[in-house]
Length: 596
Ligand code: C2E
Ligand code: MG
Ligand code: MG
Image (cartoon, rainbow, N blue to C red; front, top):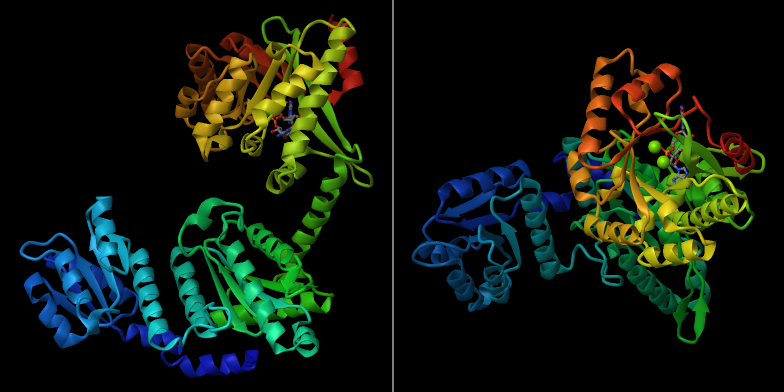
């Protein structure tokens, strides 16, 4: 077993070459290229030289390929497919037919977008494919991976035979590479050090064989999660090499999360891992329960070299273990504090619905010309016992990430519909009810059906309902969402685009989305009279919306002057503190009665 100090010692020795020994070994590889375009080979060579490779053999006459292979015995062949005289396919076939080249890694560099060509190349024994023009980092990665895999075949040196995961050697190399590439590309990444709690005890009491079994099963389980798309909660995971998993020594795993978007993605990954690890393991007839402790260091929060990052993650892990295990800990104090607060809010939010801590307030929407109430917008509030009313911006993001937004959103719809029905039955003037939707709600496949049921049960006419969506919801998978929007509209429900003009505003959304209403974001009105550009934008948005047959609603109107401006510009409706903020249902009732 190597200790942290030993690792430091090893790398210090290696500092001469400024990299772990095995990276240096890979860089000693001889890379041969066969391509009829010398310029392509020069570019590829330059990219690979950037990564530190030094030994190249370039062949621009495919007829010489086999002879040169014999002579130079490269470690890796980069092969073009489409060449005159002899094609890459033929070369591939010829070399695979010879025993000594049977296992030579061959990367196909192909400009062919034809899938059949690619399949044929793979069928003939190509190791991997790369499309031209090559992306330098992809090229470097694939070359490195291919060479590493070759090393595995050759000597099993980089892999742990028990779990079949890459071992510490590959880890250090990968970490080093990751750090350099993160520095170069200004990327963020996280290093997770995972240690099984009290693994020694399992070995001692149940024996080494059982210990091995536990490790194998857990390694599989962890690898399964690492491959699954939801580890990070965003879609990058589908990219190759977004996550790397390693097994160090008995019971210690390491994980590198590349291209981290937010620190909380690392926390989320750690939570998922802990959850998966603590599920019971079946070893023969018995069930064994294992927990783990995880330490996380992140770059660029920690401005350090790779060994320090590993040490920081390990000591954070020891700290988590010292607190009783089954938890994770960041190496940075600042991040830890942030997460503790967040976790406690998350835990409370889980119970908020059951404890009836959520309430809806209602903000009137008014007709600009007549200054009469046309409807209300339901706005969610969370009544946290010792913190008072928490505004939605503080908890909706958590609800979205954790998926609570789905039951919460249904509760909002149900409560708002029930309230509207009650007002109608009490003889209040007919009004519309606007409800905010989160993108996550559209990811729920049964959403439309659920909404229809809730609305039917309440007895309100769907024509009175307006669902507000934001531009952000269109970022992913928009076709499914547009389909749901179409179904909602076919059912009589109107749709509004909320906070228009913030975020990723794109006029193309207005064309693509089935919409009835455009809500101009509050930010345009803050400096309406100081900033001529705000006025220009507001008046252009109103005209644009009208030309697209959309009703316009101004958000956040606070002064009479703003209102007169909107009257002059022909805006249809407004909301804002000028008339009323969002108020509890009882107060809203008084406003309605006074108006009616
Ligand atoms: P939003 O839908 O754009 O709601 C308008 C926000 O502006 C509300 O904040 C409202 O109180 C505030 N506002 C209205 N008039 C004025 C004004 O004259 N001046 C100023 N300074 N502010 C004004 P709130 O209630 O804090 O809601 C914030 C956001 O939270 C909402 O923005 C909406 O995106 C989200 N939200 C609220 N309720 C729900 C809900 O039930 N479900 C979902 N998914 N999101 C919700
Ligand atoms: Mg809204
Ligand atoms: Mg808004």
